Length: 158
Length: 121
Length: 93
Image (cartoon, rainbow over all chains, first blue to last red; front, top):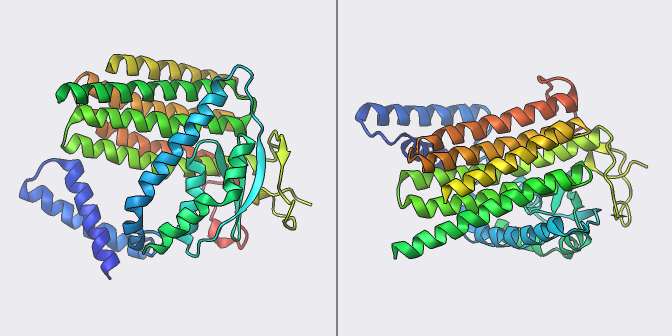
């Protein structure tokens, strides 16, 4: 129940942020639209722990800055590879295990791997991801499991 | 104070332009489609991120900043979805990635489903 | 300063279009098309600041959503050969 109210509140805040006009008529229209969208989401079964994971909001406060730092570091190494005249790529395919328990946590891990430049999740089967890495070091880092542990910690911070 | 903010935002915008150019250059330079995706993701994350952060400093505090942050969140949440769908569609079509080293199936039994990226036995 | 960023984005757009023309497979072209969409959104934002009309950001947000749906629908068509394919009705994938 609290999930539906939180979704309605977020949608209404999104309306207010995008509109910028605060006449009574438009604000009422926004509230009606937010409630209608929540009913549509319930009917589409999109307002479940996977579609609107309010449990993860607290962990997200520290997770996203860490992820941006990680993206900057690996983005810089990919930049050096692209600008190197000899183009020293060594594409590697590997399989890594995901230790997350919920679907939202696994999706977070797979998307974090893809978002980091230099590694792409190309397939999922069970709790194993197939990963394509631009250079060998990227595959080695993922097999070390540092990001896996960080995402599990983010998932468990609920 | 304003001069410091201006300098910081100019630095961030220049950095964003640099990474955008590097990603597009890699898109032309890389040899095949999987490695090109890595180059495109430099544009999608670092280029867009630094450009939007620089513009946020120029915009000050208000609705414009909020909209810029919505744009950044849109890229962060939808970028990986598109890249993953593209990689899986490539494998489904039977395009073999150019590999220097293949560690699939070294420790685990091979799956027969070609869409999970494993080599079919 | 925004003019320099706009120039850099235009050069990047030209490079992405070169890849879209050259690309040997259809997926290279889809990737290049997605990059063109991303760069167009950034160009909209930068031009909005250059002309001091932040309304361009709303157009950028809309174009971002359209870019996502467009790329995914093209990929779904090549993956299943049918835009109305229902992945849930099959047990596999």
